[in-house]
Length: 391
Image (cartoon, rainbow, N blue to C red; front, side, top):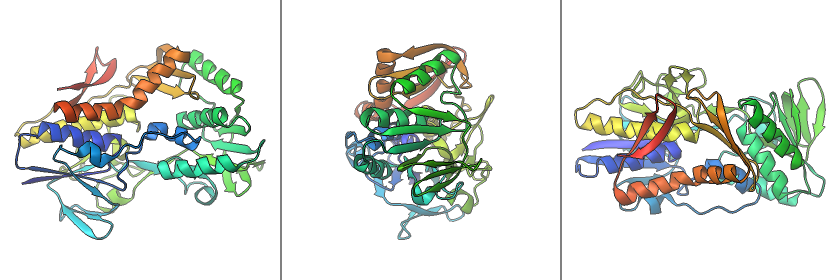
């Protein structure tokens, strides 16, 4: 029996599990186990909506996995033993594996700046988002909410909070200006939308400490705040390094061209947890890149079981989709290396596009379950875009 254990049921891990189950459905000697801390699927693309007080669909992993042959184990991974090829769950259950897919992803880095862990909210999971929603609901009119980090997560969160809670004063703080990775037109549209929503933006701000009543900047200035949301910086689980897997400077598993650990070929790494080198550099973690890595890993493992070797992994970015509340958005289409391209979408067309992207993953999983088709990442049009297609 070939025992395949997948750690983490985020976008990358769940893609790997569903696609691998479809590819090996007719093989009786394959056992797939998926491990995740909770039974509910975390829509990380929509956590800013939960944080602003909105309710999302209750997407349950056991319901999705029913009939696929995948065994679901709910629990926290506490250790990986690469020599014994075992995984410990909640320090109680031990799972053996022949092939391991490591998809534990990343969490907010709450250690880099003093006070973040104690006095700031994060958007790592539904529990954190719900905690922020409760805080925002209790704040009085005119209270200040500081959103730390001007990346896409910070921008989406600031816009969502401002739209759902117009009585609050939302301040977006970041070292760089919002939309710095976009082209000039898309960036201008984004800034204009934030201004229309009443979000104050301050670039060039480096937070040195988070306090119960605000933040201290590196230049000594204190900014009073009634709530702080931390969206900047991520860190990896220490499990990979502790297991002896080769990792990079921030704890991601270093992979070869087929997404196997360079130190342990029986371990595949996907999503945020993997340091995957492409011609333009190392892929940065997003749903956009995570699902293709999970899909590719399933294909590589299925081919290996059949005695074949898969072609090296190739990936190119397609877009930078940013929601600006429920009624506006901006989509910057990109080159494969994620630099801004010529085209963009704004307004209602962009909202429709963004909502389609945000809801697509769960629908894709459902189609794989229903029709039994695998998913394959394909680089189309000379490397201009990446798709996930049935195969």
